[in-house]
Length: 260
Image (cartoon, rainbow, N blue to C red; front, side, top):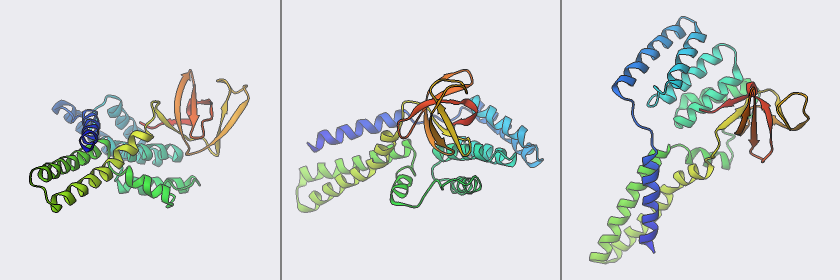
């Protein structure tokens, strides 16, 4: 029974490891370094719009794979300097999604949410604390951590089978517990993952979701700024979204920030 459970967990880890991002090629590394230098120079000169455009260009050309979190953070800073506070919330949230342990991104996110008069991203309650702990490692890190625990557990099981004794039985049990605990971050990420792109409502104080794309159609729900939604469809300047409560409707694209 334990053997089958271990094989299932190992398969899960291998799938997660296979989906982990690849490092940049030398050519891409040179390109992102050049773009980053250009953007930093513009930012320090106070030309925040140029800095933003260069960093976004790096993202769109998929040059910033390894440095994605830092680039997203920099864009958030450039956007905030231009007075687009709610959009900065989206960029900092995206940064945390890429680098969940980035303390500067968390500090800036909470700062701009306060400035926008929104609830903190980390409310400090039990659910928020657990969610932040479980999401503090990315999928690749969670996979390798669980793989290591499975290897140690398998070793303890093998030694218990070969040598016997209470010590190896206890170590095998502890190894089993370690596998369970180490699988929690990966299980959390898989359970909260959506098949649709995730986005955030930026319109303050709330965005109206309409039955059809167009201002003349009736509103069926109001979604507050900072709320997470899933993108279901798009038509021209309108996107169809689904809220965490399962409400579906159309909103102007300008009110919705796609979390990259």
